[in-house]
Image (cartoon, rainbow, N blue to C red; front, side, top):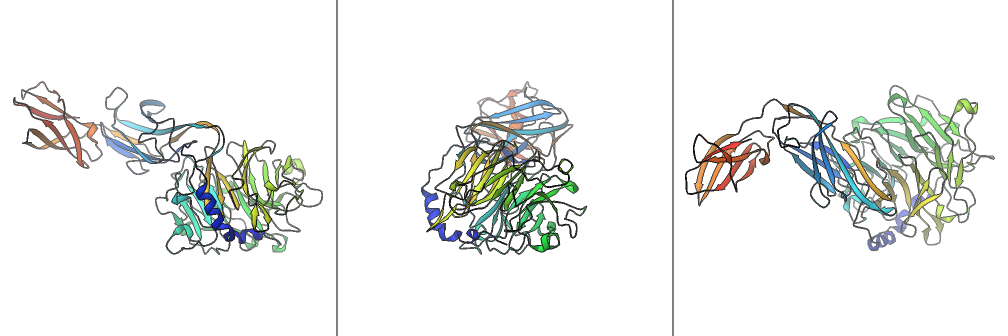
Length: 557
């Protein structure tokens, strides 16, 4: 068996890479924005509120919404209120934003009792080409020795947009800096730490030798699959928090075929539940098994002694003539793979696409002939290390760790290829990246990759404008009647009248108006110049300048 040793010499080039990263310009504008972590009153549970009660809608934007954001409140499919936030204002900024809905419809009236859903739409003006939108200087983008990266694309999950980055070797301060510790970083879409903590080992003893943890994938039903490649290749599964109690040993040594003479790298995860398939690449040279597919049992693990099914063959006159290093399966079943070569001018193809596996059409034989194969003799395709297909199926991305040369690697980069024919859409960071090891896509088409030499992960936006809508998982339950305000005190001092009152804990100051009249019997009208402020949840204060004549005050909801 042979395993790439370039993965073990990354630290030699770390200082040079960090210096290069520090002087590389990063654009301040950002694009392909989307909202994640949408919460109502700080949580993901349904929120009860009285008529006229306020609800705080919070969310995280991975980038500024340069074309603004819109929050819609819906009764069924009918929009009862639309709140527009202009670009550059709170509600359209990178990071955590919050907008208050005061319980009113477009006409300013309290909405009727019922169930209301919330959506957040973020939009961006976009770029003319692929553009880096992350900053290497951001704390959340540092990881000492990244080998795998993945993003949760399940829009029905509270973990939608979460980024997982595997650190496969300790950095200089693993005891005090989780980014230097061996394990998995868990990050929000803006690079901030996950709510429950930004680092986890999942309760597993990772070797930290450059191969453990290895590749990471997130299934469509929210499970995180991680490859331990220290030995011959094992795969574990966790929930999105990587809680130790959720750990499953999915693919084990009894699933190694070829008498155990395998090096299973990947995985690519297809399907959900008990229909999940696990695809892996056997990187053994010579005599590997090609690309394998496994099913799972009702216990969500590979069956005992199931050694998988070869779906793409290797060797002989087959287009896959050396060994696959990683595998990605597109939504349409097309099979994408890479071959790892670090010698200059090697004529073998580095990136290949095979037809969707159809055992009925193939007489139960593996695929042998690629639809296309690219990269032979081209040194910018050296050290193909990771591959991922965009959810749109338009692009396939490949991370290249580079060509081995005196003094270090050269030509490391990440390429975006058209999935239809393998033509290059973009080559990213050629000359800056040192050891690109893996790639991933989020749900809206942003590309992520790891640069092991620089010790960072990066995000890139594709060209063009974009708009993306994220629904809140929780709903607002508006109940029959609002809690009436209760005046608890009135003081007059230094020409100011202060009226203290209480309301519901979920109320906001905008739910109330101070009204006044010269007669106790009215009529009452809104008091000019009055302000209402919140002292604490459910406790409020209205203030207004006094006038020479006697006045009577009341609080109206």
